[in-house]
Image 1 (cartoon, rainbow, N blue to C red):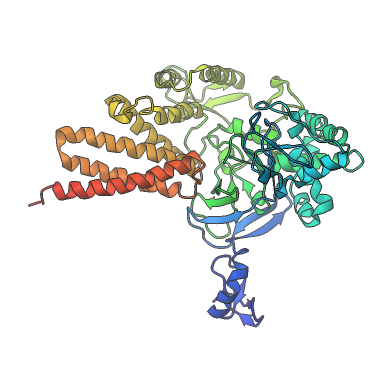
Image 2: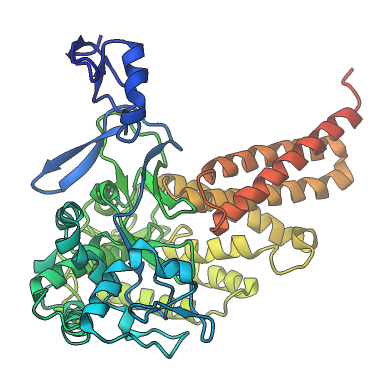
Amino acid sequence: MDEKGACMVCLSPAEHKCSGCQTVHYCSKEHQKHHWKEHKHLCVPFKVKEDTKLGRYLESVREIKAGDIILKEKPLITGPAQVTPPVCLGCYILLEEGKTVNCDKCGWPFCSKACTLKEEHKPECYYTQQKGEKVSISTFGTPHPNYECITVLRCLYQRDHNQKLWNRLQELESHCESRRGTEKWENDKKMIVEFIWKFLKLDGTFNEDEIMKCCGILQINGHEVPLLEPEYVAIFDRISMVEHNCRANCNKSFTSHGDMILCAGSNIPIGTHITVCYTDPLWGTEGRRHHLADTKHFECTCERCSDVTELDTMYSSIKCKKKNCKGFLLPETFILPILHKTKNPDPKTRNLDNKFWICNCCKDAVSDAIIQQLLQDIGRELSAMPKGDPDCCERFINHCGSYLHSSHYYMTDVGLALAQMIGQEEEQGLAKVSDDRLLLKLQLCRKITDLLEILAPAETRLRGSLLYELHAAVAEAGRRKSLTDGPMVLLGHVTESRKILKESAGLLRHEPPELPEGQLLQQAMINLVQMDELIRNLSTALPLPL
């Protein structure tokens, strides 16, 4: 029996907890049902905790299953990205010259009259009116400097108009001391602080510290919402407390209305920290750690970063070139102090102590400088590759396979592109792909899906998309094999293909139709119905076993 508490309805002693959040008590099922209308908005499977190192973070209060929605949250603030062409300040769609409606009060352009009346627009409208001169936007389609301050201004507005929201924003991390003096800091002072002071004449209203703190809050906590092109920015409250891990257990997506969904990517035991990945989990360890240091102002020491083998995948390893050696080179550690690029731009000063990469077989040592030069050369080769050319991808894999582990991040990057590309270049799809290419697609999809389950199990969008590609390839392989081996072989392949497709749809089930993955989900649901019909027809047509 649970420990006792006070019933949320009658305050009498109660032993039963809400099974969802494990934080509130009820004396009876009737009182739990009575309180649900109020409690459902607060019922979450985690609690907020705090320590000196992490600050506030979320910890699970019950076991959470992969695919469960942990939290669905509306944004505190939304606004255009800092660098953006003119967009509607009500709905954020891209504006076109000659197709705009100006706000009667302030002159900012919109897509419609209805959008000029939206609550989101009040801050810039209020301060533009105070200035006494309407805004005039005459160039469209290219980044416009007037928009750089909008989302910061919307944060600042809350200080004098919504104290509760202002306080919630001020509780979010801004890393002002870490950002101070960097190139980004100086650019924000020029493009945002001075613009707010001079253009909007607010130098006596907001001081530099207030403005720069809001810039930091946006930089550290802002989420790009990919429902439109260009993406807009949103700040969330509790989701901003979710800590980073390069092998996260959760992912985030969005509803069609712009609310954020935090979803479990793997099973999460009770008492586990809730995590997401702040960077690209398909980058190598050095790339991930430098990106986090530059943009989020901390150095990651998670389990994956601390293990040079990256959970035995050898994701960053280089082939040893010593004669007759089959080993791989890795440094002793990737966890070394990272010098901030903008404060210390000299590349010669990077990771001074990380001088050698050691072979795991022959123990040969190669200097870090040689390894970095090799990686830079391969990176340039990758950057120069034409997009959408599977032949170039195959040549890259064959060539660089003599230098890199088959699971190296460069090999995985090109392999992923190739796996998705095969079958797309032909109008007839996979039906016109050669047997060798079809086999390659099957191998790449399986290999990268398995790799993702180890390195980034929460990357459900990518795993779901790859499994969709795999199901199509399995079905096509079955069709070809059935031409010589009969319909029983086709039934086996179609059954396997359907199983893969169902897993794909499960991984993508929370994706909105505005995103490519949501559109893939819709197609997957159609395909599942068609495959069920095909399986029934094949089963009926096949002779019964003796």
